[in-house]
Image (tube, helix red, strand yellow):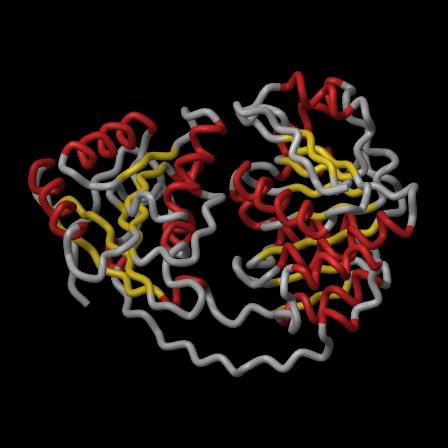
Length: 400
């Protein structure tokens, strides 16, 4: 039987089934850390990468026939480095620490071992935690695709959607839970979710999760898992907080590092100096109509400023949408889908809402407001210059 999405038209049903150098004046900031504007100026580096020769092919992995059929239907042949190295170890039941940038194929690297174990052991259950709603949804799509016709059942637990269908789905005891820390913790506190039988856990983009202040929630969630469980931790960096978390919740983990360079290395960075809001807006218009500025992510500070800027650009004739925490999950999904599908070529966003954006062909990131921290800046500009492309990042600096 083919997979049927049981989500409602409003996007509130979370259930799914698998049965089918210059000097610059300091930027004026109302809050946050001071960032020397000179740090926003940097030429992109040409990153030479040797062609990776995988040790395995997808058809050589010893995986359940249903998964193998779905892998073949996707046209997968040669795995990426993280997939080539992580999948065999995951199938052996090893705990894995994967150090890799976004866009390296991490989801497939953990999805295949997780689904295989679920199909081999009817008593197994898996918890997959992501920092943002958008990333959780992307993972859910991949899991559904690879688990098609498997008979497995899972649910998506994210904010911005109704609790009612999630509570209903949890009563059916799904074997796969995909969600964000806040909503997962909500269900644990409501006693609608008991993780004591979950013997697999995946934390994707752990560094971003901790950056967003979820470290306490994550520790609390992980402490409720089965005492013996398999862990997959994926992160672009490995700081002491992440390492402490890993040491507490893994057993003899294997570290796989396929990170070649910081994401921002392939982004040409510069500043735009302006004097007054009128000139600031006019300079933004000039950038948006310039040759080669094809797909643009514009960051502003607040929900209100994002809405105001989006409306102003729309009135000027630009094809634009907006995404921020004040929008419903359905509105955010539609805006992101329009941006991905090139129905709009300008997306205005706040930092939190944009953390789950994974669009490979963004040419320019524009910091219309200075980020609150340099770490936020790196996250912002890393959305350009992906998949071997050179991206551009421009940061607006008040000249007064």
